[in-house]
Image 1 (cartoon, helix red, strand yellow):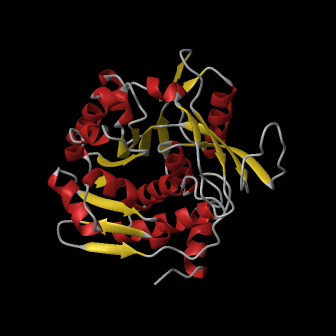
Image 2 (cartoon, one colour):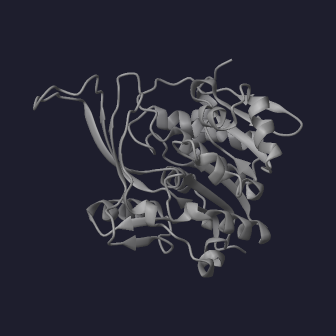
Length: 314
C-alpha cells in the first residue's frame, strides 16, 4: 500500500488578499475595505489543501524560505494533516508571495514575488519518496526555475514507470512555456490547465480542437477549467462539458487549483472521471464564494451537501 493517496509538487506561496478593491488610492491615501486574509496558495498548495479537507492522505513537495511566511504555511498544513516531510527550505530567497487586491466582481489582479519556489529541486534520489503514492500532481511549470530545466519531466517519467497516476497544471504561460511542456506531456495522464491557458498555448479555438492538440502531444486526457462555463473533459472519443454550480462569486483566487485538488480527491475515493470533475466543480464553487484559495471548503460531507443543494448552470 502506498504511503500517500496523493502527493502535490510545485508552486507554493503565501497570498495576502483584500476585498473589495475598486482602485488603489492615489499617493499615500487610505481606502478601507471589508476583509484581508492570509492563506497558502499556488498550483500545488491550493490543490493539496482542498484535497486534504476532502479526507485523503496527502503530502506536498515545495520550497519555502527561512521566514515568517514559511512558518505560516507550514502551520496551516499541519492543521490540515498534510505531510510536510518532503518540503525543502532555502536561505537564498524569501518564501514566494502574492498581493491580491480583489475587485468587486471577484477578479484578482496580482503582484507576485517569485522567491523560493524557483529553488525547488527534487533530486533523482528523492523520486521514490515522492512517488510512494497513488496520484502525483505537478503544478507551476514556468515559475519553477530549477525544476523547469528538465527535472519535472524526469520526475513525471519516473512516476509513470512506477504506475502512479499523474496530473499536471500550470500558471501564467508565456512565449516559452510550450517548449517546457512538450517533453513532459507524454507522462501526464490528466492535463488540467484553464481553457484560456490551453487556448493560448495551442493556438486552437474550440475545446475539441485544443484537446486534440495536447492529445497529439501525448497526454492521456485533457480537463480544461473554464470559470462560469464549468469545465471540459476532452478525450480521443468525446468532449463533455461539466456545468458550473451557481454561486455568488466573492473571489476567484485558487478556483482552478482547488478544482485540481477536488478532482484528485474524487479519483482517490473511487469516483469515475466525470464524477470526479463534478466534485471538483463543487470545490471550485465553494472557493469562489469566499476569500482565498481554500475558502468555503470544510470537509467531504459538507461538500456533498453543497452538491445536492446547489443548482448548476444549463
